[in-house]
Image (cartoon, rainbow, N blue to C red; front, side):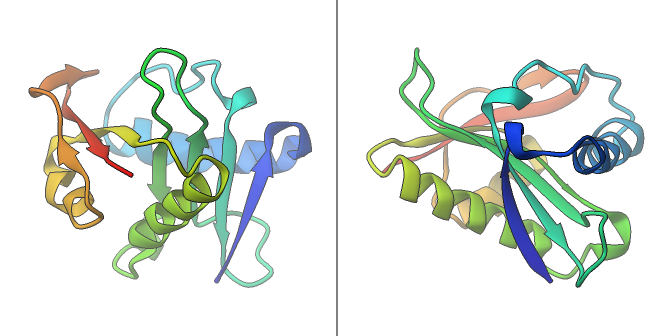
Length: 149
């Protein structure tokens, strides 16, 4: 298993298509959440893909963002792991690699995420704390969580 970071300008059409396919399969179809996954933010994100050996298709995905102009916090999201690869701690690996990259690029900025409510303890294991009430995001309960630097 190896990981690779991409800036949007460095993504080939095929690589970006494979990332979007994984995102759509997990975050829209599997979770029955018809939301606009293509939110216009991919061009300013850095994209992380996990690959099994030399396989060209990612089995895990996440994206990160630099400091938000309003909050000053960095963030990550759109975490997705292919169903056949679950139970192998790839979600933890994605989060750990995102946090490492954010700390390298923007070490002085807190990290704030929008998390599905059922993942509160998962993210809590990385030091995140809830900073909002529960809210509905396209039919799924979410909370904002923050990791202070």
